View 1 (cartoon, one colour):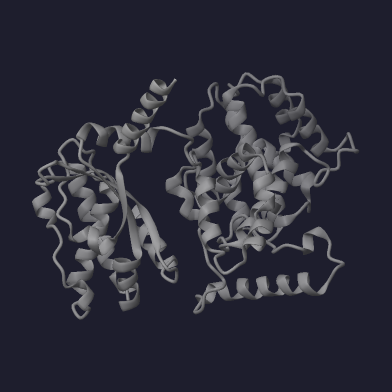
View 2: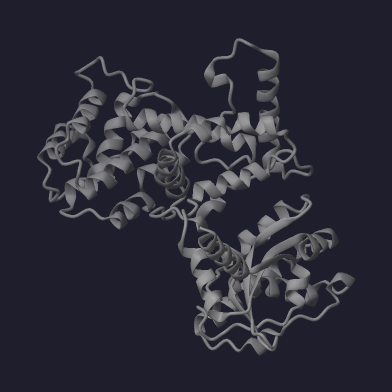
Length: 462
């Protein structure tokens, strides 16, 4: 028994010895270190968008006591002659570019009087790396004016990395693999939750718990679906941008304005006044209905950071659920002769809804319907809903195979219905839209084609 305990104790000790050493390193100290980037590393693939997001985050969090940028894993040989970056080169190189641009353009700041490794000495042979480095540096130079003395100090002395030092190259790769491949990956909406929680640092813990209660009690798979297949698609499709995949690289679309900050841009003033008005109503009235208790968010408007973001998710996710399930909140299902009833009944009993292409079209229909109701309510829904239905299902009725790209192209077309909804100020502007007629039907769906034929009056030239 004691021998077994001794063996366990030795194994535990060995495991502890293998745990890599980690420390918090300021950006300034990180930049002063002379690291190399091994030839086996992947190319530098950060784009202008990635760089822009990083700079925006630095600006956003400049009032915090510190901002943790990420983790960097360093391999050092036992003779301390070699220091290579195993993981974190994308951010490291970007930080070097930012410092280089600041030093060249802000000559009067003494904080910038230290040497950093030369990019020329890092010897980039990959054409992708060279192209991205040049493009990103040019963009960073255009944003140097965003950095005043206070922000430069925050960037160098308050922005931090978790620096992990490993002396065995095999362990370095193993640790890199465990950091990037194991465990449960954070979905984009989880990252947004963390971001907006940080934006509520001025609130007490009990207040934060109350604000995020709906989020925490909602099925995480539903939240993932709501963001990826509804909120994100409306944001992008309504402006003509692709919305095929919602990844962590796209979360900036849900980062907006913190109304608690001073010196808001003029465009945010009206929103700030509205938020104060809603807050005042909550505090002074006990007779508010549900629609009066929250900010009148719009799905295509910019995000209000912090507690208003969670308010947005709470109420818009309820709309998503109502439309997915065809709840009577928006639809009168008592009149079986109505066009709305016929469309909903067709979709509820549709025998080929299992097909991938049909699922894509169903999602486009729901997204467009959600967007319309969010903007115009149920006004003229009896006339508008057939229009939305046939526009969304047109690829299915026309094409033998409907792919994700087909629906994405349909939604982002300059003459798409979803873009018209964004541009319209009244329903009459939408009702003049006509679904482009079909010259052939290849979707192998008699149920949809029959319903399409019934409303032939919609099939006039656009």
